Length: 214
Image 1 (tube, rainbow, N blue to C red):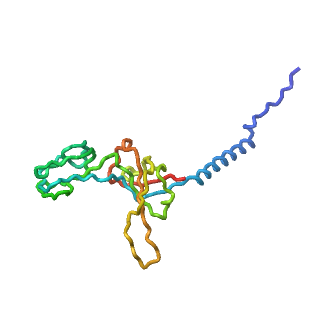
Image 2 (cartoon, one colour):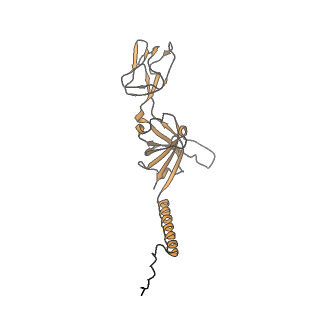
Image 3 (cartoon, rainbow, N blue to C red):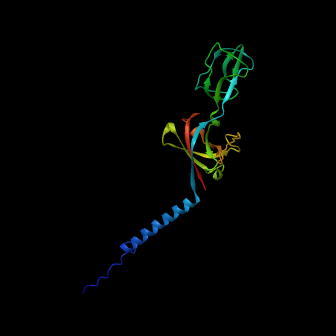
């Protein structure tokens, strides 16, 4: 006598109706999560930006003729490096850096304080951008995460963080106009990044900044 075989119970996860419900639920959860993220986060694009560092200008203390140049544009030099000879006086660098320009005109007379060699310190490199006061300036805060691109390297993205927002507008002059429309002021923002991670970035390169805000 054969035992009557009982029908196997089908797993609830294998039933077509159940799978559809689970799929809809997952989509709803993902969409809800995205909408929540979007409502609490945003981005702000600052297109008018560039890699920049303060120039360190080297000059002679006394007037004289430029008799020799010891460095070239692009040289990486340590502190206390002789860079030029003006008259009988040697001009030396006070700190390490990259030479970005030289007055390559041997025999030319230079007045005291006139720049002969300019350099930048790599650790001072920042991404500097300008933002209109009415295009999200009030949403910017130091420490916000940043991604930026550099025109030279196309779509490659770099990581940084918002370091500072200038306390005064780029153009501080008073402009009088018969128009009722007030001029829009721009403010500088600075983005810090790990220079050692991105040695290809150079002073003066054009960039675009995307700030992630909450």
